[in-house]
Image 1 (spheres, rainbow, N blue to C red):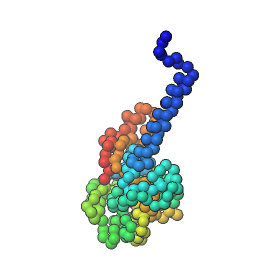
Image 2: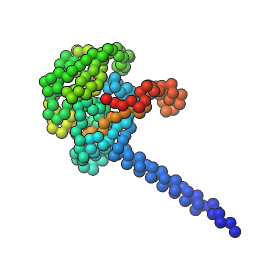
Image 3: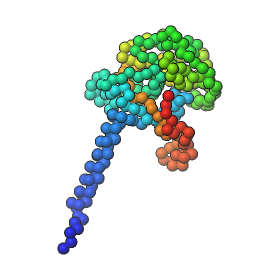
Image 4: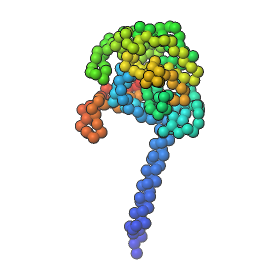
Length: 255
């Protein structure tokens, strides 16, 4: 008499249940990693050029600043504030929830910490009354949404010596001269690296901007560009996966 089990409805059902259990375990592990450790994001616009381009696929560390309700998918109202909170550094590139709706993911650079005074004068950035050092770094090209335009490129240096590149069309833009912004306690001041093409903390929420960002709204710090494709790449056009790839940006660590 054979010792082999006979395949039947119960065997098929058991196999389906086992597959379902495996899928659930995989989803649970993925959710755990997404909430506590890392989350991927795709860059949708040019507001962070020349450091992040539309089509960059980045990895954000969720543990950098501790955790809030926005660390979980759909931002459930589990608690207020942050646990295990750590303050960002000036110059960190951060993903956060737009304060005006609490849902939309934005990415900008932290410029001001609580209590800081921020102002733009003639296209120059001032922090607590002192101009942030800015060194010309040639020119580049950026997509304005109305075509490609040449843009000035500058290296900014924070007071602690941290450096990063910015793009600037000139000194007479709408956001090149601003009042003094005093960052409230428990909030941060964010700016895009593409200084004349960014709706950020210089623009009030009622005008379509970001305004001051509550600490609770921080999702995590952008760490690395994992992959990158130029506009036009599509999941449903496999040939664009290669033709539109930007391999020079793969695995690029963000400053």
